[in-house]
Image 1 (tube, rainbow, N blue to C red):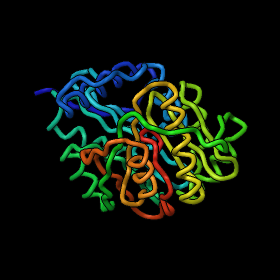
Image 2 (cartoon, rainbow, N blue to C red):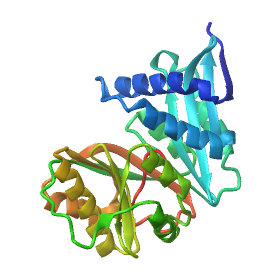
Image 3 (cartoon, one colour):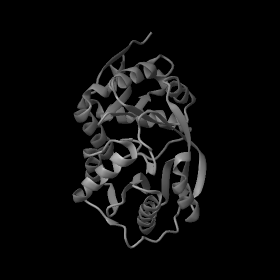
Image 4 (tube, helix red, strand yellow):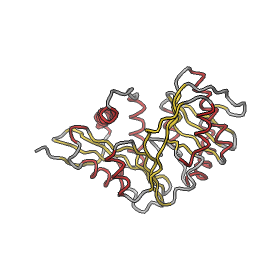
Length: 282
């Protein structure tokens, strides 16, 4: 019987982790999905390996990478950035052990966040952790949106605004996580003094503001920016706390999909609204 072992993630594992990630999600969805750019995935892995080496783990089966987990902590807020197991290795307990290792990296955290796929095994595992489940919608389509004049392109000089808004909505700043996103091709949009959004590849990767009206404005700006590229837009993690975002998506012609997954939260995560979290950086 193949032997499963566990060890810290190393940079030389990045290609194997990305390959397992692709196979795991293809298997879950039942078809081949669009492939993420390696430089984007590797930028994410490198960032989290630098900031959270204690939360970065791989499972090996007979010397080959068969799974990985990335747990991160930002100012006392723990999140699960990644948990994957290669389909041939599933059912052998690798996911459970990787989750335990990533979870323990957050010992002492004041709050915890997991963004889960629709995989029944993942949903069950996260529920058993004592976290509260918030089922989510996704919105997709070609937005009929015009850029609000008060929303502008952002850059590194706007990071203090993102940090202040993050503290208001979730009690912890992303800080350099957003820098990594920008360095790997994402764009930052800001509503000065009120909110921000990060977009890439037609997807709203993150959106937050001090109040719902400001959040609506910056989300409209993000979707208008996507519309201008001709790409189809996607907005994820639309939980019941984010009715403002659901209404924006419907108003500009996006379709809603109920098969999105769940946001799991526990402890002190702030109001977590108005806020659309990042799958990678929570």
